[in-house]
Length: 150
Image 1 (cartoon, helix red, strand yellow):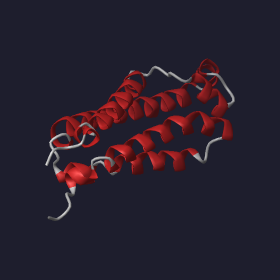
Image 2 (cartoon, rainbow, N blue to C red; image 1 turned 90 degrees about the vertical axis):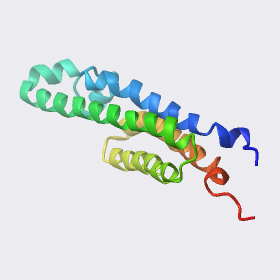
Image 3 (cartoon, rainbow, N blue to C red; image 1 turned 30 degrees about the vertical axis):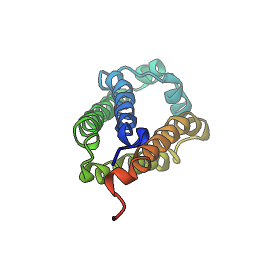
């Protein structure tokens, strides 16, 4: 049976998500804060004010921030490798494994609910985009992974 276009190329969705996470995580891993407004909204201080008012707290913040970036790069690596080699070829375990993606980002939404509402709105849009994309990437090729019984 000939695959439909959206079944054949759904793996590209996870490739794109992996690239997005990689591009977002690399600067954070290197300690570059790409969204200083978020820090200011949460702490009430700019990054420089935070650094000068409490250098030890800033070092702790920077450690966790960079660690989060390293974690993002690791997740991106697995997304890229699994999408290119296993998901693209229709290996069923990869379909199950990729349910991690929407669940992971749903937990990020839940985690961000403890933040001030202005911070939540900054995080919510990209998280929802990734969740919707990942669900499309899982549901579009459903018949590729679970063909109808003949």
